[in-house]
Length: 244
Image (tube, rainbow, N blue to C red; front, side):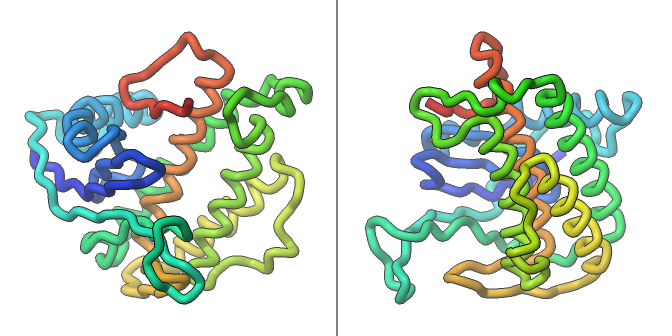
């Protein structure tokens, strides 16, 4: 099977190979070539992840994997006037594939992926005491509680890019309340966007329903792995980013 890849270079000094049409399937590398080399392993891991949560079934054919780069995005920074600068707001990837409307099948699969990524996250954090949640780690921006808060906040921000978020002042401050409140809104919004070709330009970036789903599944899987690495640094996975 041929997998189309959207390659994003320069995101936090790394590259991401996004497997287009398969939210939550991605590979990292210090550069584009390395990310592409890691993609086949990431696809195998993704198929295994789906089967582990779906009674051994997967909607992706398990035949020979072929990679085809469909689109390349070079991340750049802009200032408040939208001029390119060395340091500023990073404009992340917009791929041609993001223009495509979500289908009912996309949404059905996407809801399953979001459900499984949330279940994985909650399984990792469910037994953590407050001291562990609030513990700081060297060279880390957030505690584990901070990462949880960030996951919910990011999903609200994705919705806000499309103008479909609830008011920011209604965003719960408690991270464990924030997660379900924002996720429920995300699922409600996506349910109404099947077949929509809505594309919004905001703060120098394009956003669409398909991009929202792509980034939401990626973001939660990415940070669940992040938390697991903080808790159990001796454990590694082939597709886990280097958070040092």
